[in-house]
Length: 113
Image 1: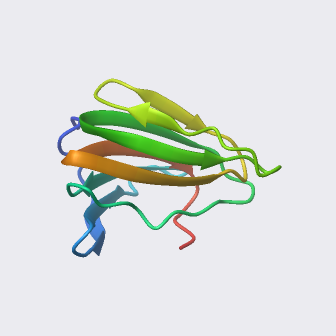
Image 2: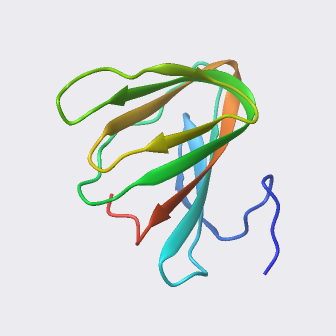
């Protein structure tokens, strides 16, 4: 199956005034998810015990809030082409800038929240 970063296939799993989230569950062990985060909005933020994630930022800009399991901040700005690796158990939340932010995420297993 072939997809592109602008359309990963799948179905809408969350949509509100902040963002639209689409999950492609066609693989057995990995989920590919896209988030179209509106201008000056932020995701809810969460951590996953036992799960790592990879975020690939495609368009727009902002910053990602990252807090390790010891409570230390690892926040960084993000823009097109950036890839952020999120270790097991780290809290993460994406904050979009004034143009919004679109990113694709890959994670192991099924969505737990």
